[in-house]
Length: 68
Image (cartoon, rainbow, N blue to C red):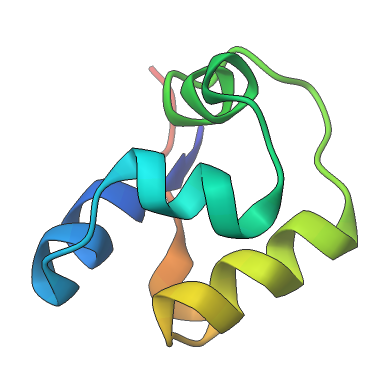
């Protein structure tokens, strides 16, 4: 399973999900779907914006956990 480390990265910077949504021009519903793993695809634009606004590399943003 692919996991997004958005919440820890936001907490590290003292930012909120609302702040990220506003800057990325994404709805909170869509961001929550990403956070819950309820999406089957994500655009490179969103990945790039997440890295930009969270000031991180893609490897910090995404982690992989083998499903059992």
